[in-house]
Every structure is written in structure tokens, then in C-alpha cells.
Length: 410
Image (cartoon, rainbow, N blue to C red; front, top):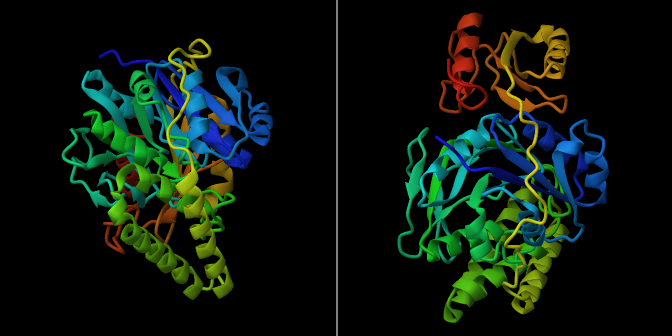
């Protein structure tokens, strides 16, 4: 099966450390051919310049706080037939693109989306959902492993996440890319609805996984507490003007404000916000809404032809290896993991303690995957709280669990 060449667009602003980790993960992706287009501010470009594989990247300068404009610039520089998107605070599994792009072998598939795991590397942030023209989401029942191709029905669209999605480039050009009116938030939701209105099919691909960490930004802290709701308010105003009948907008907006108030009050009760913070955030939400009512919609500029030729990244296949040991052997095994990465391997390190602690997975900045937890503890949230295991059998089980995402089965 011949799959199309792919351009991966990464937008980064104000998070150079996260960008470095994302690109280190992308360097281990097992797919060919693909290129990487980095659209970044000065801090991001300076960080990228220090990477040993910087010559394999397309690096584009952009320092305006508008993710839709940045993505459109990335599309304009993308020379692949399909454009994939991942956030700078996310890391893909090595077989991410192999799964995400596979449905494009069908000519009727215009877009794909994968599953997104959260910061603990186990729980899912997002799986399969649909969205309607009020922005309301509903879960979708799809095969847990095989791709499911979905065609639009009524006013509902298949929801994909901006940190794990791909779209045919010709479709993006025809739809004029992302709407710059959505500087942040609802940008991919708007694209999903326009894909549905145009009658395009979208495939949900569970095995195409990325790990999304929610790195801190000007809009939220590392613990996901909001710092500013201005852009959320502005995006909802733009969204309403595009999709919500004028007679329904006031009630729709009241529901949005109530949801954001509940969110902020929850953080206040937990001690993460002060009462004055809640009042300030809700005022910023209202200020953003007022701005969004005047904000221009549409008008995106996406080049029909790529600004530069296709620039294939990396192009070498890597062997995968799994290291395992007791938690007290961690220092030695981490050193070995780094050495193996330097030799070009994709490395998973499993460290187990004699406990029932929940497992956590993270991609280390040195380029290896580390899974830690109790020998008897959960690694999937559907597992029992405690289960007796021999060490070797537990390692074998964890190896099977990640197979097909991090390395081929077998």
C-alpha cells in the first residue's frame, strides 16, 4: 500500500523546552516520507537551532499570538499531499503517522484524527467525539483499534484534535485553511464543521496516539488553571456568528459563561484561585466576547503551491528495545537508555516498585520513554487496583500493551 507524503506542522510560541521535546519525539517517528515544518517565535527558533537534526527541518518565523494564522503559514510551506498537526507540548508515539495516514489510502477520506493521552501517559484526554453547530460534544462508539471512517450526518461533525489530526492539503486549500478569527480555541472545531458541511469523510484512528502534556502558557498554568479567558470568549463570539442563529445566541452565551464560572469556582474551592481571580477571569471572558463580535471572520491566506520543495526528514528506520528493572536500578538503566538512544534505538524503560502504585509514562527529553509504577498497580485505568504479578510476566504484559504504537507487534 502506497501512502502519500506527509508534512507535519508544529506551531510553537513561548515554549522552547516543550518544542525541543516534541521534535525529539518526532525524530523517532517511523514513517516515510514525511517532513517537519516548525512555525515558531524567536525563542523557539533559537532552541531548534541547537538540535543535531536542525538541517532536516523546515523552520518558519512567526511571532503573532494566533494559532490559526501560524498553522496556515505552516500549510503554505508544507509540500506533502497530507498535512498533519501536533502541538509543541505533545509527543507522538513512534508509529503515530503510520496509523494516522493509513486511512488516506481510501480516496474518500479527507481527514483523520487519533487518540490523545494525558500527562500521566495512561489516561485519555480525548478519544472519539462528534460536535454540533452549538459546539456541544458527544462521545462516539468506534472500534478500539481499527480506523473508523465516518461520513457527516445532519449538523454533526467528526471532532478531531489540533494536536493529533491530518487533512489532505488540497482540501485545506479549498477550505482556506484555519479561520484566523479563532486566534486560540475552537480553531479545529470550526474546521471540522466546515469539513462536514462540504461532505468530507473523517477517519478516527485509535492507534494513532500522541501524549499531550498541557505545558504552561500565557492562557493557563501547568496545573491547567486558567490565567486568561479573553481568547476563549473571543472565539465563542466568532463561532456564534458562523454557526448559531442570532435568536439563540444570548442563551447560548449564558450557558458558556455558566460553564466557565463553574470551572473557575472549582479551582477556587480547591485553593488554586482566589475570589478576585474568578471575577477577573470572567471579566476577561466578557471582554473577549465583545472583541470577537467585531473580529473579522475567514480571510485566510493559504498558498495553493508550497513555498518550498518537500524536505524529507530523517529517513532511517530504528530498532526498538525495552529495558526493565526494579526502581532502585533506575540510575543505571537510565544511563543505558540514553546510550541506546544515541545509537539510534527507540527505547522504552520500565521501572517497577514492590507496590500497587499507579503507572505513569513520560517521554524523557533525552529521547527515551519511561514507565514507572508498582508491580501490582494499574497501568490501564480499567485494571484492578491490585493484582499479583511475577516481575517477568508484568513486563511482558506492558510490552504487549504498547506494541503496535511504539513498535511493531511481535
